[in-house]
Length: 497
Ligand SMILES: *Cc1c(COP(=O)(O)O)cnc(C)c1O
Image (cartoon, rainbow, N blue to C red):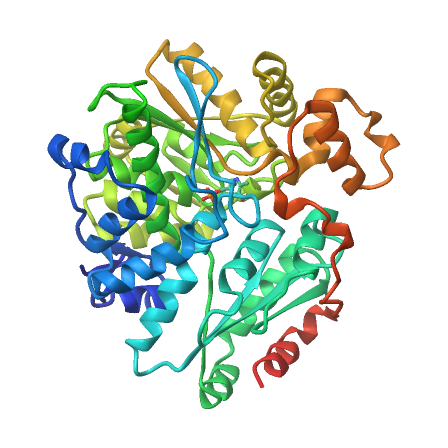
């Protein structure tokens, strides 16, 4: 399999190279040159495979410079060990039509685990195939979820070190506790004085620093990133769309080949793009419903064909979707344009220069053949949490709630009654304050801390707190360092001694 850049100025590379470099040399994103196709017969054959078998089958096409054993061992290490339950991505039926795909049963209780448990294992194998590189150093700035998922995924990974920067005071108490108690011999976590942008800019500056790259290279390190533009984050996400569909067929809720809608709470457009790729691969997807929060740049784009990032950034109760530049949209536009790299490069140049780009009617029509989009504001999001709990006794987190609200809008607008899978991206206990207050009002003031509120939410709803979030406040704090944004480079140098 050859991976090409969406901006077309560089030669194609193999899977391992695409994985280790993360971004193409011309600034574009790596995309597979072709996709395997599963017809009815092939899909039926997959009905009897478990999650690991399904993942191995799909990866055999995309990771073709890996041996079968290498793929197997990475996948089993990720999904078959202690990190996930037997079914890593279980479905819960809320109504005859609506099903929830729970992607938060991993070690950090958010869907990023689905990819970040596998990516480091793939990277370790790819490293051995790359004589140019000895060790990888992963550098990440996080606003909360990604950092912890990356730490869990990369902890003790062979020949890889990871350093995470988070904004001091800029993450929730639970998120901070998750990170500062992180165990592992190859990692460090540092708070940066400033906000997320300061931390992010600091990391970008380190990546752009050629002198530093030279120093690190002499020490045997290549810098890399674990964010969702890496193709190794995207491919593992294709698997659970197949898994969800096949589960519905297996339990008799749908017939093989009948179309299913997927609703995806969207930020950087990674998760939803994996759904689109699954549909390209033959999965019978009816509509892909894109759900945005108040930062509704992507949903506006799907409705109008104009991508306009020039608007106020709004901090919402679904922070993992607070994004104005959805990087992975570039891959969709590339695919829809018929792999027209110069066209994509033009859009991205416009975006960088003016904060805006727009596609023509024909392109928009093709996007709308697959996608429907809308957004939910914060009061609609809270109402969805309350309503789903009231109607089904089922707790959803604010990101999933954005999806549920947008799905309601979809049904009202289209009358489409096809079976639907709403993708649930985080455990409600990870965002317990918003969930608690949406259901019970603001008497959460009575709770002394977020940790007490976890208990309250669990007791009041009779829902168990996921194991990784239990007793977090009692775990030993291992990472206490705080640094100025201007000291991030020095901290990195010191960490990679
Ligand atoms: C990252 C994240 C999202 C957004 O996913 P994208 O792939 O960036 O679109 C949604 N919900 C949660 C809980 C997340 O952590």
